[in-house]
Length: 287
Image (tube, rainbow, N blue to C red; front, side, top):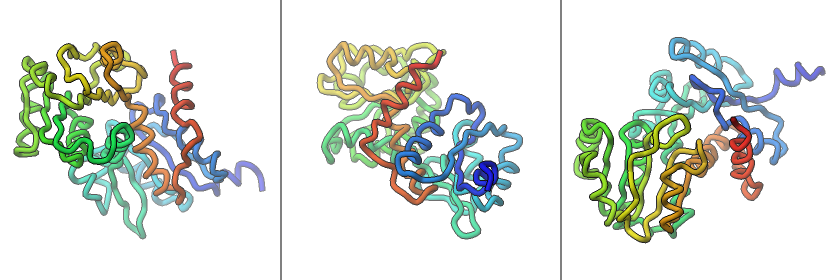
């Protein structure tokens, strides 16, 4: 059998988005596949919003297709093509994973699990109970952060966004579980905060830095920036200077990929192979 014929019979998964060239998911999953000796493939595919439903349904007609990850701008559209939706995807109003269960398409959201895992690795289980969490942002990432943060049983979640109306809308959606703080008052929450989460695009490569000073932040607070380009955002750089522990978005990326990998390929993703350093090196090579 020729190599091309073998490739046609290989199980494969993919990530779809628009744009998609920047995605680290293929490197991440292919590294895990090689480490486990699994003869399968994980691809990166550009799919426009106009073609999303048609393209996705076509994939599920392929008997070698095992599932897909979905990134921006398709996470809400992924719910609409699904026959079954997990509770996590329902609560987030978005899905980042599609697999086939029987003759039905099942949508799930692993972003919430991915968000929580790095926090539990940093602090003992139960540490966040009764603590105060501050989230900056108002989009899909902020929503996943809210859902994840609620699972940690904090005393309070404070949300602030440059567009006050977005924060107010999320406060209403989550009733009394989230307190919206006017953007001009965002620094008032820092002295009592145990965890600061940047779920906005502020500080991302090509974007303006997040307009948030950590002066006055609670001494033992952890700073969690969901961005990973760059690896050290201005926010994390300031946190380091001020003596705070920090996490970047690479930890979340890896953690949210683990349940998808198992769902696609039937094996748990390996540990202890230095996957974070592999991704860091790939990012360092980018212009």
